[in-house]
Length: 133
Image 1: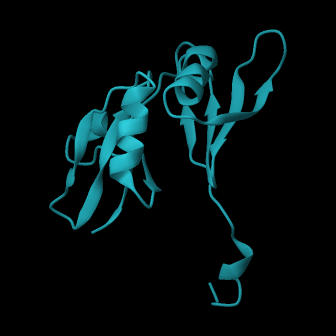
Image 2: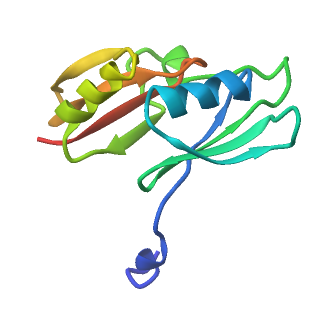
């Protein structure tokens, strides 16, 4: 890709297969502070887009025989499904806990030069919220 093409990109939205869109959307909205941009079809949605700042996720329930497959289930050391850059992981971690969310890994400095924390969604997807030290 040429350097001229890069400025055209403004955000990315990982696509997570989920068991049931309702509980997963509620988790992102209520525990992590995401806004629901899209939820369809009505009355039994199976597709959603959630956003917080410039961080977006696409969530979709495919079929009962197509379960979520988070990275850590494939290999334990490749546990993150998404990295979300945040300026102040300590403050965000405290906010997530104040909203009733549980941190899978507490705010800390990592071996790879980052500071942040992990959260696991209802389908097992692990998100790291952090920044370089």
